[in-house]
Length: 477
Image 1 (cartoon, rainbow, N blue to C red):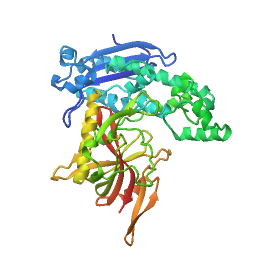
Image 2: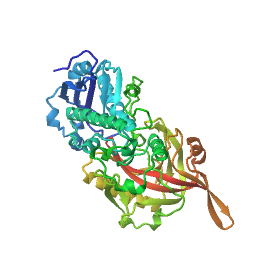
Image 3: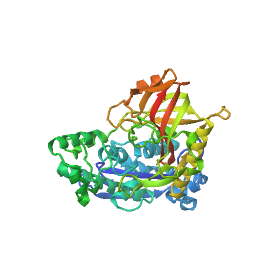
Image 4: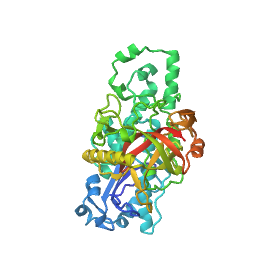
């Protein structure tokens, strides 16, 4: 039955789709699910769910089935999207839309589906993307902010990757997060200070500095304090007078033009990388110093005491693998056409790989991919080594510049040094510890030779997985 109402309800919705397996192929909708929620009482009023037969059943691959469990026989006798288009339109049009990552995934898929049948798509009067909202308001205390991770964090069950189940889980996660933020606004700062935190924001740091001046707490007291259960996952919401001021929600419910997603490696939006001091070379190894068989990938806690894990590349002694790569030649200079949630440019550049570095990265890729598959991930693997079309035996790799945690719009968390020759000695003069985009663009150009100190960060996001090479320090020759 198609939900009805006066248009004041919030339409939470979710899609299950095929997974493209070749360039230019689109996601095809396999299931649409939605609930209408009263914005005043936060209760589910009505629901709708429908399996959908795609135009080509062969687009339902094993990877697709592993992701959502929807098989060809499940949908071969179901209606097409054209058959349910009226229902979808009536549910969505003129309402506030809500969902997890809907701005980048679900909404573009809805518009594509309506365009394919020659119809105007439904239009929202506002949108709430819980991925964006929770990342900004709740912080990354729950890890990668995937729905499954958030559900595990709050102990509300496993994600089924079926539309109606996921929509209801999304709604529950939002209510849990809202409750935590509400409690934070009422709790004494000292209690929040002594709770376990997993993220640091500029607002958090500012609040902590104020608390330190007004209410100093000794390390001994802090370490011996037993956290109240509700506080075991609480960290300060921000420096606002009311961290749960719902008037700010209006900024999230926006009817701005929605940007279509671009299926490239740069699009995956990982959390800003934690800055690492690299004033010396301790812990960073040159490729030739690494024993290839000693490279492995292991699961480690997301943070101390966390039950949530993340993959990490290590050597035989379980020390994190970090690379010191001398004399790298830049193939393509700084690119920053993609933005993060805060509107900051995500910068990267491409370098040519020497054989020894190529061998190390190939082994890292193999180890990380194996642990990803073993963990049950169905994400498409993006190799860290990029073969250059038209260039025989010229592999390349992309190096990312981490975004600084200071909150500045255009500052980045990689030390930049200039190599200087003084007689027979070589020294490094630090140019900047928080360079701007403009500084980086002026220094890292095609043909530039540099030394790079890199961390290797496996990721699995939006059905894409791989390894990011993150620059901690660059020495320009």
